[in-house]
Length: 274
Picture (cartoon, rainbow, N blue to C red):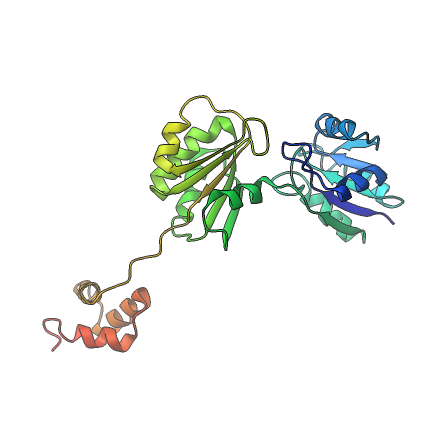
């Protein structure tokens, strides 16, 4: 039985490929490539003549049998047009099918626009949320951004050049004026890593933009701590809406993070509760 290798390939600079990846591409019985013409240029550069078969978004289900049959007797290398296969490109279904049929699946680490943009951004890297490509339709995109308003981890997004302006506008409208990094054409001749506010990015990239783009967006700022006055005001507001004193104290304690006993003690000073 063969092995399915998930081989990371350069995102731009052809020198960004590991010795292990080159060896496996040479030794594999078949290379399943997102675009055989694109991968063909990489193979030609390194003098690799392994047969290829196209495996992309529009034929990934019909090509499963071909790849699985090859795995019966030999190894298959799955590659995308750039970076690590399976991240925002075809691969998930093939990996699932290979596992279900008992084949070994082995990742071959290498280039990734995701990690390259993150580590160069200057934004927190200890925790992040990868969103892939945002929805194409504006209503769907804005709905997703609304769900992320309170997310405090760094956000990573892939975007196309034609949609960049609209996406930046939606980010500014919904997430507000945050820090953002626009990483464009990473490792290529015209690489650009732009850092600033969302509003400034929108103006900077208002003109015609080209290339592959990764956005790194700062997470939401932590909420300001509640002081005595705010605690009392919130308890009073709850009670004015008909909530009992006990329930108001409970709700404010949960929202503020204060101990319930302290909220109760402060609320005793409210008019009518002495």
